[in-house]
Amino acid sequence: MNWKTEQGFKELFSAYYNPLCNYAFSVLKDDFYAEDAVHDVLMNLWSKRTSININKEALKSYLFTSTKNKALQIIKSGKTKLQYEEVYSQLNVLNREESSQLEDNYIFKEALKRSVRQLPDKCREIYLMRTQNGLTYAEIAAQKSLSQRTVENQMAIAIKKLRESIKKQLNLYK
Amino acid sequence: MDIQSLILNIFGSEKSKLELEQLKSWKEESEENLAAYQEMIQIQNESKNLDTYKDFDVDKAYAKFTNSKPKSSNNLLKLAIILLLFALIGLFVKNKFTSEATTPQTYFIADSGVINIELQDHSKIDLNNGASLEQKSDFEGNERIVELKGEAFFDIAKDAKRPFKIELSNGRSIEVLGTSFNVFDNGENLEVTVYSGKVAFNTGKRIIVLTKGDRVSRIEGSFVKYQNDDENTLSWKSKTLVFKDAKLVDVFDDLAKHYNVEFNGIKENNCRFTSKFTNESIDQVLAELTKIVGLKFQKNDALIQVKSISCE
Image (cartoon, rainbow over the protein chains, first blue to last red):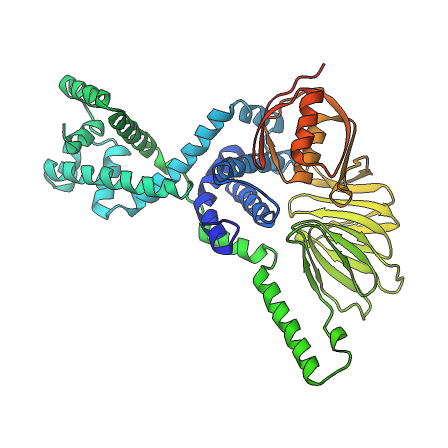
């Protein structure tokens, strides 16, 4: 889908908004300014669409870099209580590969979160009890009055579904 | 080892020595297995603190975006249809002035390069790429009002009876009688630079009067007036960039704005740069920087990763 069309841009917006906001939040520590920064970056990209030349692989880094620069501008303008020099030096320690890994990690989290949300309720509950709360299969079985066999089956189903769904989600960024 | 027991093994709480060995040999069987293993480990690791990854309201943000973006070409299409209707009606009544019977255009958008506009009062406006200008009054009354989004250069026709008002983002505005000046407003940053005459800039809270050579912009959150020494303010019009013993950070700022690119990875340095570019591409400019300040970089379309700079 060509992002320079209205429909294409809407897809780009919904794919990138949340990961970019989370990234901006990691820099700005403030929801409002994080959303403000990302809004500005996306608005800017849309208004430049006729003059900008960017391929799909570079788009991801372009958006994350623009978000970082925007966040730094916000800090520089004195709207937050953060120290510009301090944040600036923290952000610029990463080399190109590390930056790219960081960006991929935000996108992976987005894909994972969307995929977990799409799991069937029971499956998701068991999955989260295991991965987030750290309960053992036996403990989950006892709590939910299920057989351990059922818990294990549900867990395996959850992972299979997640892997398929994550793959699909990640394709949106390729 | 079947995939189900493998998954339960990886995601299990405690692994026996036997299970660990089985897992190890499965991983080493093929590249494919190793990739699948790493993928599952990543899912597991990221799931642990998934609740620290926040959910922002995308739908609300997209609605805000569609409301604030400049009018789309659909609207231009509608405008074109209306103008066409006027033209047809004109033909129908066999008006001999048909070709001049269109209503004056009141909305302009520079969506494929800089455009030059002349309004009915003969004020001349150059809109930078991406900018839009809407005429909000008919120019017949006591006031001339336009609304600007983006960057433009104004050369306003003198008319002491009817001040010319430019409405900007966030309730800010500029009022003038007859003068020339440049405005850059992207909602976040705002810069007004005056080339002739006098300009009253209303920040929404107070009025700052600017004369020839003055510039106002936002520094540390508030508007400050100072003498403009940036020779490249009008580079988007002149297609010429001039650097005279300029600091590299300022050079990169000007280049980013002029060529719609982003620079990443600029480290502090004391390099200075002197050169002049007319109608040159970003690649030519980067090649020059490579020669003079030893710029090493990787360019991926609009994203330029600076690797190192070495000047004596």
